[in-house]
Image 1 (spheres, helix red, strand yellow):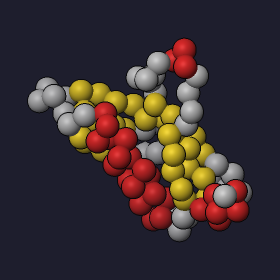
Image 2 (cartoon, rainbow, N blue to C red):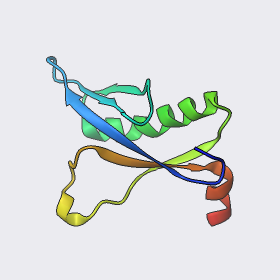
Image 3 (cartoon, rainbow, N blue to C red):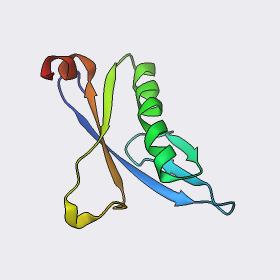
Image 4 (cartoon, rainbow, N blue to C red):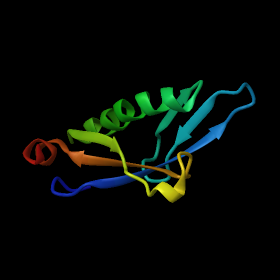
Length: 92
C-alpha cells in the first residue's frame, strides 16, 4: 500500500473443531484472529490490521467495506478497507 491509497483486505473465516472462528487473509500474510463468534471477530480485526501496518511504519484506519445487500451478511471473503490515517483524517 502506498501512503496515498486505500487497500482492500479480504478476510476468510473458518470454523475450527472446537467451534472457534478463525480469520485469515490472502492479502495480509500473517493475519490471524480467533474469536468465539463473528461479532467478536469484527471487533478484533481492525486492531490486528492496524498493528500489522504499524510494523511497516504505516498508520491506517480500518473499516469493514460496505457490501451490496444481495450479498447477505456472511459473504466470503469478508472485505475490509485500510486507509492511510492522514487521508482518513482529511476526509472527515
